[in-house]
Length: 163
Image 1 (cartoon, one colour):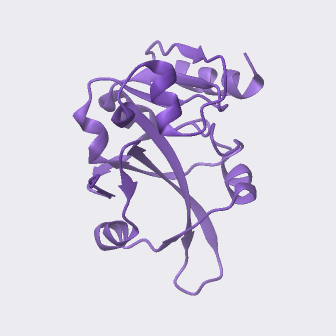
Image 2: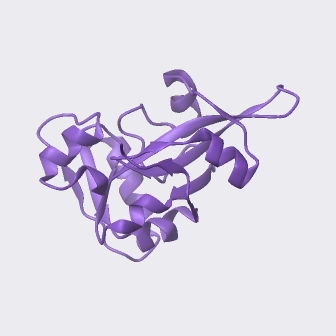
């Protein structure tokens, strides 16, 4: 296991629930690849999406984590209407500086600094969901209730249904 996986594992142990980090044979940088490797539905992949929150005066940025089902896309208009947060794109450098993890392996927890977390309702369709565990080739399984427990995120309708 890599140090990033150990960081996630140590964080998860705090919740008293056993989470088994699974190391895959290759990196899975997309929800589709992860679903194929895990033999599950794409919708069961819990994408950790980092956005840049832009302050009203444009002077400060902070990271916001949105957990969304792999078969959905986050609708930034819905996010703004429901939360009042204006979000922009985050580049790889911003993601690493705010989370301590590289894009493709960002877990829902164990970030370098506390992040506001929003959970898209689309993940609640499944009894089991899979999230990155710190590297592009590692994942762990949980229920949507456990995701909320470990992230303290709030459930909202933030995505577009697949067309």
